[in-house]
Image (cartoon, rainbow, N blue to C red; front, side, top):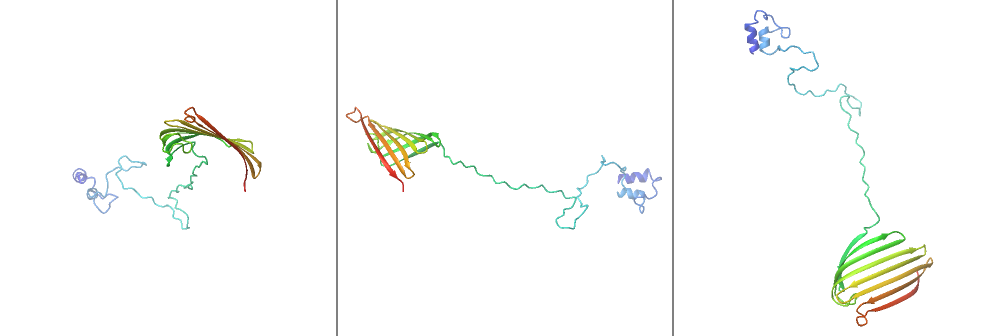
Length: 227
């Protein structure tokens, strides 16, 4: 508006004819109504005095008619790789360590076990625990009721393709005595369905024989046939 009044006062002798951009209006009226801008033309790619303009939507320069063909202005979508299912890892072997607790009318105890050696030919397992004995001398236990400490060692060894050796040692210590039980077993396969088994068992009680300790032994040889 101020530019129009300035032209009417200072530039009236010069701009008396209509401008080419608005030939139907006088120059003063065309400038005052903002139909003819006073900004100098800019022929560069980016003009410093460019005004804010609304975003121009992308126009398609070529619209395909065949089905399945995308316009040239549309960016190609990202190729989605096929989903790869993760295979769960599974190991057929169990943990080498374990904890067991429980009991019955004989005793209640908790045991910690460790499988020290695990192989197709050799197996060695150790167990240690504590508990309370309820019935004396039951299941190779001590002679008095009360707290106890237990231990167990199990050894299994394959001797070739036909023979195997097994040893087991059980120890229980209580308020009055200590009871030890050891078993040895040797198996030999004579034929595909016939097995010769020999075992030996030793039991020692520190309270037996008047407190001087007693030891009992027992052995056997058996021939077993599988049906």
